[in-house]
Image (cartoon, rainbow, N blue to C red; front, side, top):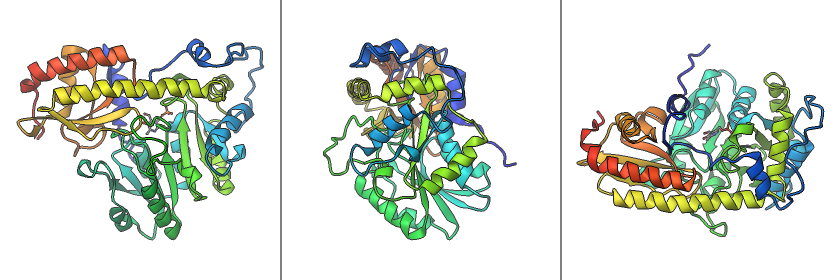
Length: 399
Ligand SMILES: Cc1ncc(COP(=O)(O)O)c(C=O)c1O
């Protein structure tokens, strides 16, 4: 068995998120209750939960109600996606795990977009693959280069993993780049997994922009697998519902076989709430609330970055719920762990240290999750400004 590395970001959140005063590390759009979800619906007479239904395992691959709503959303702009091409899972974390568990063999070579959520590159390693990271750099607005991708491909490359929109940078791989990625993958018969949990929180790019990225499953490449979730864009992390979609039924069948060994089915209660949230009577209200929240809070974060521009810099995010901000003193990167620990201790504000949770090279970086409740973000960022002004001199510099 390969050594299982600490999942650094999850372990940071586990340690600190329940005791902080201002959670500005959270990646979910401010979470809601079932009552609030029903308030957002246009159909106030229908409830999200049918409590009289017997709690059998339910539909093994996911309820018709949930999968048909997902199929409708994926079919909105292009070739319809049949609901049989979708499997539900316990969150996107399990969706990503299952894709790797079903498709990655020892000796395979996997390429993963970087920086990103650690499980995307750790799990293929645990399964015996060798993994190369496809680096996105701040000087290129976090856009990885196609030439770099070409140079990473080997005869044994079977899977390319991307995260679009990206955690932690909030950058997007735009449509023309996605097309180039597909062309290269097709040439080498490589499957692509696109983790799209932050779709469709596009706060700073217009859907009419020619670069606006479609879901990878809508771009005509059958070997494109996408994963998604109710946690981030839909404010319902507590129901633990995610999914896998792919146009190639052979791939879906292979993943379904692996899925039987890990979960049987998703909780019926959770799927009912997810189906209600994605129903056309509710989904538009829910997304309008969250995209508005992202825009309003991003304006506060932009003001914070401008106010503190002698101590920090960023590439402004275009989508998702996170921004990756670099703090420095006299031109030298701060130690991001010391920065985050002192900030938490002195102000109650929780950020995520980039060098610990996304890779050692991200010295000075912190991940800020800005789509929590506006009042909390505002108060937290004000407290963080005071900290930067008064305490930055006491923070260690990165080595
Ligand atoms: C890129 C990415 N994928 C997957 C997940 C897991 O999300 P879920 O709550 O759907 O399991 C996260 C959570 O932070 C994430 O950032």
